[in-house]
Length: 191
Image (cartoon, rainbow, N blue to C red; front, side, top):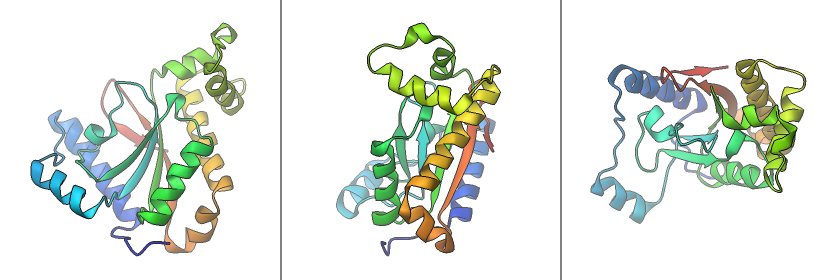
């Protein structure tokens, strides 16, 4: 484990909630993307306070949604916010080497990957891996918003069951939480 821990999971979650509130109220991202912060992170490395695993959807921009800047979030994007070994390795890296205590699995409303999972004719060569995982997560659920939540919960379970660091670090307040981003309002609902 690293000695870089700067913020507890609970503090990180509050920071995300406050950042989302700013974004929703102002419609602007208030994160620092200045040349000074670029130089600082270039010279001294990153210290993200949260990992955000979310969909690749172009309407879902975690740094903007949470009003964060360079070096503050460790973002992992994959269609349908599904979890496989690559995402697990990235999460493990952020927790063990960067000291990040909060892992957020964030789905979103109107998700194209969720919608595609309802149609077996979408099983192209590589897309099928994503759709299979989503279908497994949502089962027979036909409501897209409920399916989104089931998919998020499945990804949380995968992270918690797969990573030894999660099991070992619960006493050190490493936390995995779920969220749904409402693309129409900009609000993030933690589930």
